Amino acid sequence: MSATGGRRGTMLALVKAAPGPGLELREVPVPEIGINDVLIRVRKTGICGTDLHIEAWDPWAARTVRPPLIAGHEFVGEIVEVGSNVTDFRPGDLVSGEGHVVCGRCRHCLAGRRHLCAHTIGLGVGRDGAFAEYVALPMTNVWHHWPGIDEDVAAIFDPFGNAVHTALAFPVLGEDVLVTGAGPIGLMATAVVRHAGARFVVVSEPNPYRRAIAARMGADVVVDPRERDLRDVQRELGMVEGFDVVLEMSGNPDAFRTALANMAHGAGMAILGIPTQELSIDLSEVIFKMLTLKGIYGREMYETWYKMTVMLQSGLDIRPAITHRFHARDYAAAFAVARSGESGKVIMDWTDR
Ligand code: NAD
Ligand code: ZN
Image 1 (tube, rainbow, N blue to C red):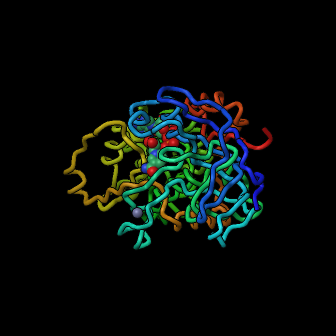
Image 2 (cartoon, rainbow, N blue to C red; image 1 turned 45 degrees about the horizontal axis):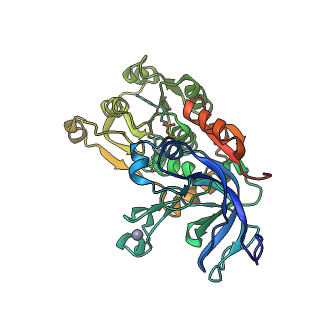
Image 3 (cartoon, rainbow, N blue to C red; image 1 turned 90 degrees about the vertical axis):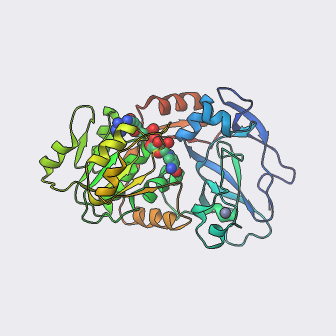
């Protein structure tokens, strides 16, 4: 059965048409699907920093992306068609997509550790993405939502998964947690560690707009790192040995080094933020404090997705991290506000063209 008609029509999509800055909203063919794929009518999408890099055509994008490419990987939509091998999904199902398409054949994939696949292809980076009226994905990249889920929340399951993967990398129950960087992902991670039973949650973020949201996400103390020393915050809270868990969500070298200096012996740092260049640290601090540093990329398939779902169902609220909503035709304004930093998560609506 095909909701797009026997002959596939065209759709609106936000396309990087050629190397260089900018994106174009244009008509392109609706994607074809193979026997193991599903075709999804996109309802809402989130804008990620990756999309901003692709739009701006910075050195990373110029190195990584081969135009023409439909951008975008954070989405929720409704299945409209399934390949002949697909039995677990049906037209009408509300789903999101895991944005990392893995090889399925390497050692880690075969062992069920798909997030460790070294041959990952990114939706909206290495293959056509979700900033479109339709997106095609392998069935192994699709996650069912429960009926009635807030569609804006469902649209950002991908970055919410980054937040959950990082926040739960070390046990946080009863622990003191430092979150460095309150971008959309740091904001969601703040709510996650609060929900998961942390004692104190301290968020360090220079941007006042985002600090205000961090307080609403459940942070006990929110600091501007340029103005207040974390040792002073520790004293105020009655902490004696340093933070047990750090979630590095800024990619900023100063944030990284300040966090290291404020960690307790035996503490863990989960590192999601991507530095734009090499950064140096005092490794002796890691050694003598016996710290564990863990890099985080993407989400665990599908343990992270399971955790996201059950935490939302048991009262976790990430909605304050969503600050702006636009129709996709107003994508330029949506990208501008996402880039400004005066925003949390920015959602684009792809229904009702
Ligand atoms: P973002 O850029 O919106 O947020 C980063 C925040 O860090 C900003 O609010 C910024 O003001 C803040 N910051 C800057 N300097 C700081 C300092 N010295 N101390 C504390 N905070 C500081 O990004 P995001 O979308 O929330 O993503 C967070 C990070 O994770 C980014 O670096 C992004 O590239 C990275 N990321 C990684 C993955 C992955 O799989 N590893 C996936 C998505 C995003
Ligand atoms: Zn693999």
